Image 1: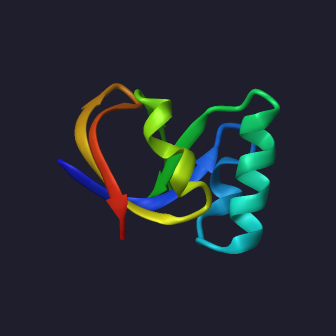
Image 2: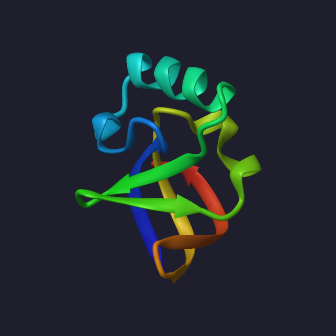
Length: 81
């Protein structure tokens, strides 16, 4: 399955439902302080299995492909949207 959304962080969640430079700076700051990358898509927040794939996409629109297990997307690929 594929989801399109914005890469946010576990502290801010839905606050970053729109991609922007401001969101990117905030997400990077929160993740640097220990938060996890999450995907905001369709008004929901999804946890992401492979955190290392999202460093270049903080606060940006992405397409994530993977399998949903509970509230966690087991990520197979991520690309800019």
